[in-house]
Amino acid sequence: MQLTWSTTRSVARLSRGVFVAVLAAACFGVLASAAGAAEVDIVTQGELPTTAPRHVHYFNTIQAAVDATKAGAWVLIEPGVYDEEVKVTRPHNGIFIRGMDRNGVIVDGQNKIVPGGRNGIEVYKANKVWIENLTVRNFERETTDGPGGNEIWWNGGEGSEKNGAHGWWGRYLTAYDTGLNGGYGIFTNNETEGEWENIYASGFNDSGIYLGACAECKARINKATMEFNALGYSGSNSGGNLIIENSIFRHNTTGVAPNSENPGDGPPPQNGACEHSKPLHKHKGKLPEFSSTEFAHCTIIRDNLITENDDLSAPANGSSAAAPWGAGIELPGDYGDLVEHNEITNNPSDGVLAFEYPNPYPPTSETIYFQNAGNKVADNTFSGNGYRGGSYAGDVAFQGGDFGSMKSTNNCLTGNSFADATYPAEIEGTWGCQNKTTPNPISSYSFLEYLIELQAESENRPTTEAVGPPPAQPTMANPCENVPTNPLCP
Image (cartoon, rainbow, N blue to C red; front, side):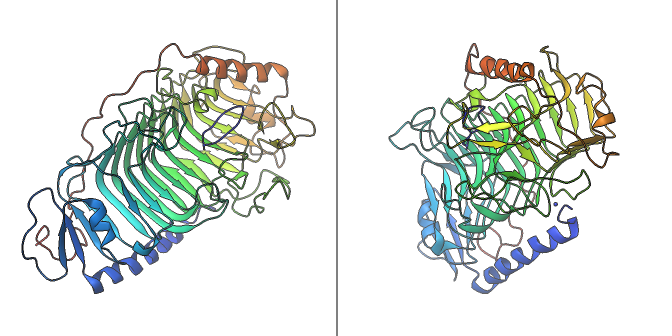
């Protein structure tokens, strides 16, 4: 699940109306269940009352409250610091976990290093689970690259190559780590149909947010702020209907990095086309090919600020450190993605860096040669990128055609405001979206050398520093919204 140069681990857009309708339908089913059951479990660090209203129950731990739930129930958490790991499993489908204050409800791993690592809140193969308005911090991996270290994790079946759950929603969430072994802040894998909104993550040695292993994700990431991570966003083999919008990615080692991956969070590849081919299973099938630049894109990165992804002192594990660094948006072996209407500024290597990705590399009998094909970069504003210098540093650099009969074709760019170099030069000419087809972009050993230089600089970063706690983040205006009547919400 981590993005590396050598071995990666880790919507037409759903029309906005269609996406909202799908989300609303899912929410309505859960809310209707909640209204019927009207069960509320209150978590408090105070003394448990001897009596409580009907359908209201009190607990001293979040886990005990979760264990008592059935579909539609609410777990409301009073402010306090809770030193516990929380796991939600399938018998507890369709529940709401909500803190009464985003900054005051803290699930705290205390930077403890234990065998097997620790995770904060894990939702394991449970459907339609909401987590809202709280902070999870300082749950660490066993080692820099070991297990654990996930703060908030919807886990639909890691490593299974199957979607084991559907329906995940997170709002007003903060995840941060002040050590060096926090892996992922907010994390979903092997699931479909979900949304993150108003989320924050910092200090993670892999990525602040990660969405992987969903060929057709049906997902939206909105109003996220990711900073001081190895990767702001990482998404291995996640595509189809997936929107990342209205967010800020700054001061990460690299900003936004959807990617194809093998083996890792399979099945590969990453494919953002709306009508896309089935993913590969155990190397069976064909990689995507696009006959022209004129097709609908469903994986969309839009209306974001992607700036100053320049932090070579951020925590990093072995694989994230091995990725080429300093790009605002990095597209390793990506297919059919749309990058539009973003402000992409002051990233040291490139604003957008797209390249073919043989994985694993150096090649073995298991290597898949992922192309860089069918991506579209439109109507973005670029400035101040490429100040690190180097053969291909600038606003945009596209590589392709280096590995055998690679078909990194039908990428196109249009309507962008460039301030610095592009590679190929005058890229909106031959590679402009006015062309029905476009050829392979730059094919040269010097481009591979440039990628390897960026990788080496990342791996040999002069220092790796822990990140301090973030400032308070906006909490829900009304944490009693939609909650059945109870002593916290009279």
